[in-house]
Image (cartoon, rainbow, N blue to C red):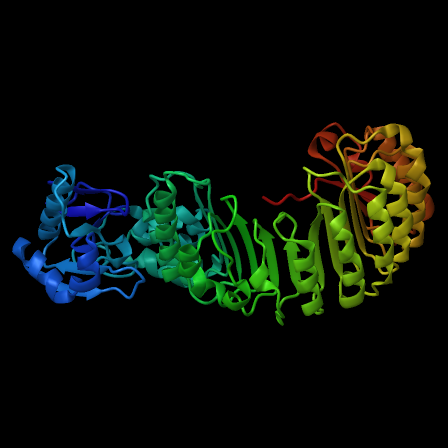
Length: 547
């Protein structure tokens, strides 16, 4: 009658072979915490724990954990004794009897391997009398079959037998370097993540962890959510190696959870954080936690007071969705980190105009600049254009992205862009409600932009209304363009318009020139029949999207 546990629920079952061994482990190690203050301060020792628990049965070992809160692991010689202890304490809790300790099974990955599920590669042999035909295939055939399986299936195969495990560990798992964990249910078990991490953890270089569980201010479920998230982060942090270079974390941040993933942060080159709660409980010094970071993307309400200092490795910072960051703090970061080559921020108010002189003065190495207006604030207007003008002095700027531009300010922005003579890529995004009646104000400016920027290779126009002739002139005079993305510009892309674009390309481009890639939404591509006839001059494609 094994006592089994899956990090969420435990049970005592009759048949040793009647449970899912991929989910549960046999548990004989319990996690013990004191409930009374005097016990926590004075009596929480190995001897006091032994005196209290020896009446239930023989104890194999007791270990005090080096945590901030008093905690210990008690391992019994039998899982049945552990079950007896667990049941006894739960019954007393239901009867409202005061107990000096809280008791629950230790995490599955902390359970002793004896009487528990072995890790991949241990104690897995193929029976010589196996009759299944799959065991008669040679290694090349098996490896070919494995190519068609997803990660979950490959992990399951690793637990079938020693042969499969060895083949997967040598030829398949080392190639799996990207792993995503997505948790959206508090009752989800850790078994799948744990088994997967045992197989591929040491090979992961790109890690993504996201949970849709979050708590607001005063939420009654806060401790439950934090505890649940912590379990997943612990099993990940204990199994990944120091090879992780890129990470994405989306959960309700607090100091304890950050401490759990600190070993991962030490060697990161790129970090994206998304905070699911309204604000950070306390400021976190990411500079100290991530000394080797090159790219830092903050999608969280973080004032970044403790980050306002030199960060020698940092080259790219994005604070696009952080309205808690005051302009003065961002200016301080800019002043102390002149090595930055990429800067992305949101324009929340006129107070952000002070950023432009700081950028021009300190970021001489800047190559990429993204400025977007927060959707809940006034779009980028003519006041923004006045301050934007001075950025033309940046000598190395290659890419510019401007978002939520008012249609009335487009002409001023576009007229200023030719000053950035080294631009290779431009992305302009307007507002969904832009008025098409004033297209003529900036149509010729768009054409001049394509004509004057001789190094421009990619141009994105999103929610920028334009006339058909303006698009044709951009293609005619922007001979250097390689990629043109047009979306929601109030143009109807018919076969007739596509052939007009091809005719313009034939007249103004050499036959040896690379074909222009025109990126269109899928619904526009679906109704076009011209795609097969224009490959030499124009390639119609759907833009890549990131999730």
